[in-house]
Image 1 (cartoon, rainbow, N blue to C red):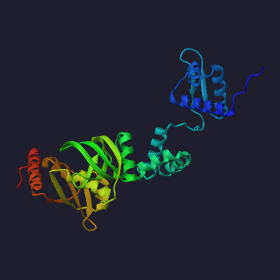
Image 2: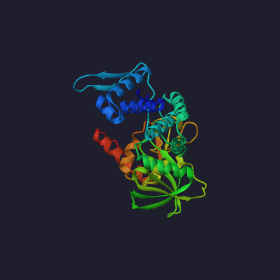
Image 3: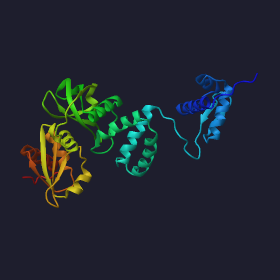
Image 4: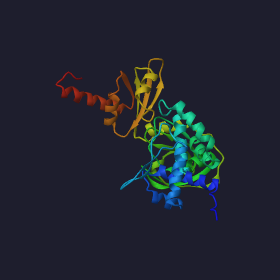
Length: 326
């Protein structure tokens, strides 16, 4: 009696599963692979040969510590990705394609086009939800909980109300909001939302959120402020006890190269001057940072900052033995 040959579909599925296993760990023994695939070690050897014929460099070593290992070839072989990996790569590529990673824009666009072509619709919608709901203020953002990011991104796109527990500087509690935009800064992620309990616009740090839920309650979008400008003001001045206004004797384009948007706002004051605004809780620290800027300047507000800078200047002159102070 002749044995029934393996179906082509079954063999292909098993070879793809073998490739996935080889990509997930550096070394596998033949026995381990056979157990995972539910076949004999002889079938494993045949499937390894099929991979090699397709151009995958599978190395095999005998003896203690030996086994099968996916090696580096002259060309990058296709990768098998699970859902989470595919979404993560697509989101990173979209950020890079948008210019947030220097020098990778063109390559990111080409790679993203290939990946987007084969992404299932359910995964493509997740990627689009994160991308469409996100704008970049400056640089790359710090890691945030992926589930939180995805829930908020979907809620932004679907105009769904969100509830979450929030540990803010002025206390903790549950918040009910209408989410509008996610903003990535060089250090953190923020949500621009309309706070239903405070009847006003607010920004929230994602790393301070827990128990984030979208309950399916839809809302009618309001006229929202510009997300980047609002978050920039919130994190650079509105949350602080003091706000400094300084006229700098340098054009806005030059000053902006030295001051990140998350630190303060810079607005033009003619062609050769600009106004720098930033917040802080300690006048002494603000005076030191502003005094370190490499341009001539005039402190406009607050008067207390001018007094603090005058005191610091006197101490510095005395420290170097210069007593010719006013």
